[in-house]
Structure formats: C-alpha cells, structure tokens
Length: 121
Image (cartoon, rainbow, N blue to C red; front, side):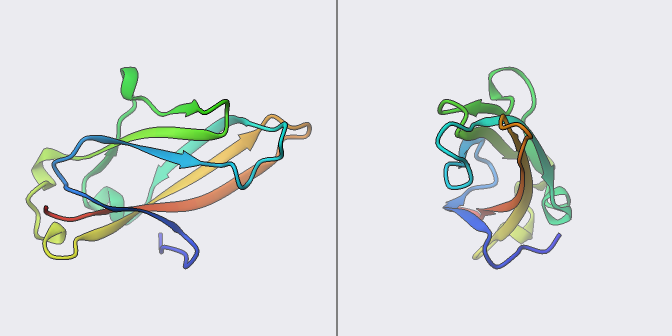
C-alpha cells in the first residue's frame, strides 16, 4: 500500500520498543449528529513486513471514543523486529488503512490511510 500524499502522519515518532496508544479523530468527516458506528483497520504491507501490531485484546483492543468521534488503537512492533535496521536513522513510516461506517441512514463510509513513524530513539 503506498502512502497517499494527504495521509495523516502521527508523530513525531515512536520507538519500535514502545507499546502505546494512538487517537484517530474522525471529527472532520462527521456531521454534527453523526458518529462512528463500526470500523475496520488494515495494516499496509510495509507495516506487516516491519512487524507492526495493532493490539486486539482486553483494554488495548481498538475502541470508539470521544462520543463516537474518534478511535483509540494501541500499536507495538513485534519483539523480533524491534532492533531491525529499518528503524535506524530517520526510521520508517508505516501505513494503516482505516474504514469507518457512520450511524447515519443510510450509513456513510469513509476510508483513509493514516501512518505512524517508528525510529530508534
């Protein structure tokens, strides 16, 4: 998956050994009385190859927050990849495709690519 030029890059960056949360706002896409009803997250091929993981269990499972206006996800890099040279220097930007369906009738669907930057700190 290539990273589109208008992609939101979260930053400044994370260390590959971090296990932390990321807030994805959908406010700019939603009408005043509209909220996220369902969502799907798909790692880009580059993210999979780099060992990026979206936690999917317990309190770190992806969730809808802020009265349905945002998503909260927890990201980490698999331990076997944490010292990989791809994270040296400026590091690497890893894409995640986010698809949301809204509560409107009929539901509106939005698909956007976001990206996170990981580099050795």
